[in-house]
Image (cartoon, rainbow, N blue to C red; front, top):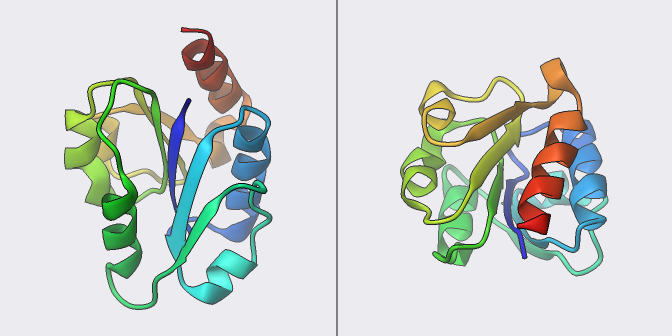
Length: 132
């Protein structure tokens, strides 16, 4: 099962909603963290774990706490580089879906730029890792 860590503070609600609509169809294990208002602005898959985390880096800490290191695929829904170390050390396949993704993440994972490339690359990545 694909583990999804979503930083609600780091991606506009419209991009997050599109991404969650897609990952919801794959039965991914979603954990999302961020400010309460940002979490409320997105339609999350039914079994998502939502963590209200207000303040600087609080969402990042909540997501790092939720992370599990295993060989299963990991999808980071963010754009900032705070998870570059985690992405580079994860033993399974890693993708990052976001807008204007930080260079540090580009070096550690498959990057899906939702604004530039649309949702197609995300669907193809999920198809590939879900069948493996």
